[in-house]
Amino acid sequence: MKFLVDGMLGKLAKWLRLMGYDVKYSIFPDKTLITEAIKENRILLTSDIALYREATAKGVETYLVKGKNEVERIAEIAKKFNLKIEVNAESARCPLCGSTLTKIDKMLIKEMIPTQTFKFYSEFFICSNQNCRKIYWQGSHWKKINEVLLQAKKLTINAKERKIR
Image 1: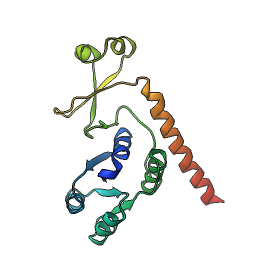
Image 2 (image 1 turned 30 degrees about the vertical axis):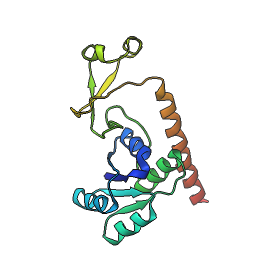
Image 3 (image 1 turned 90 degrees about the vertical axis):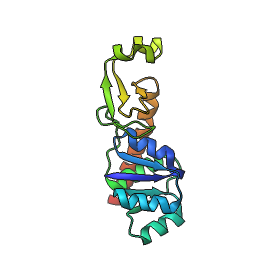
């Protein structure tokens, strides 16, 4: 499943990439987004009602995102498209560019990361995009990432329970 996210949902694009999904983020005009979605066979995610209507009228699979914050948006998209709400280091993508991440020996990047980070962490991943090459590890921010995803999971579970009743 491939997504194209409009310029109003940049944070959502990063979250979906972290969760391992193929997400392209674009700030181009609506007509360009629609053409791109058709050409690349991507589901267009937008919070712009005008773009939603135009894309839908042109046959693009489009979803109008209604969530007010990232937790709600993650839960909403996960529920709609049956996505797993989790970050798996083996399948996560670079939040910045969307390319795949590759495990890398920390000795190869010693000069590229802070000294304390090198001392405390053993597992590192690098973006496969030669123009990005951002390095990632499960640092202190990992707790915050997991908290956001847990909140999103709870929202989807609560929504399912309300549906059953």
